[in-house]
Image (cartoon, rainbow, N blue to C red; front, side, top):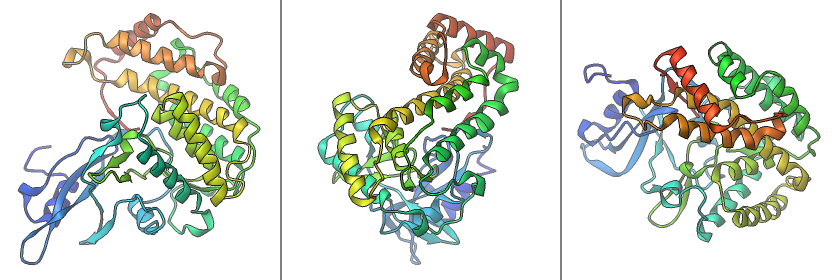
Length: 367
């Protein structure tokens, strides 16, 4: 975008700050165009606290269901209940989120590495607070239809709606463009029925608030080693064990630490939400299988639309993407009912053929 036509997010940031030179951004991120800035006072002085102003990026492919109408409204309603949420302030009719000065957990401890104990205890504390937010106590405008809100405790209905979203909002809308590629990696519409059968029979558990996207880049560690939780746009009300499964899948803890966190989660959630961990020994594996299957559909599309190696990317792109998708497909073979998984070189060849057939891949992605 040219300097003569600044985006809405940038215009709001400059207006709130009053000093264009003090506005930082846009920050890296898929969902939003984000700017960070201090607020100015009546005398024109700038505060030391900085705030975020952002707007959704245009043309995104959304791979996850969104439940609440506004992230800022949700965070405002959770003030004092979820202590790791950055503060919210009002300015000129806008709700701004406080920008936490620090580093992401992913920067400090990359995927696969253990998380320091002091930070892990704060993760458990976050789950404790989430379990305490029951549906009837959360009065926030929803965007999801009533049919997408199973009754409290209906964990099977909750997961079935997520499977349906993946089929109806990710797979089918992109089928015209990606059908050949899906077929070459062994995925078709029948895999959804296999998945539904595989993950059926969950134990009922009372619902609570879920963040639903707790990975290392959504935790900020400040200089005092306090852990903050950002990006609540995918939050929903549902099965508490689903939040744990999503967290474990995304965090890639070492096995020993994943087991330790799971034990702490069980005792913590049961203490706040009796029955919230009921049946976890059986159901956690099924929910992890769902997350593995979910990744297949999103990762195939992401791989096809990833930056063109001819435009400054890694020229070993096909081989690398082939290995990544092979790993994802192998992990999801059982829940999707795949009889076999193509070898990495076959997947790489399929990606190359798709790119040639569709020209230069482009488009924006959203996680």
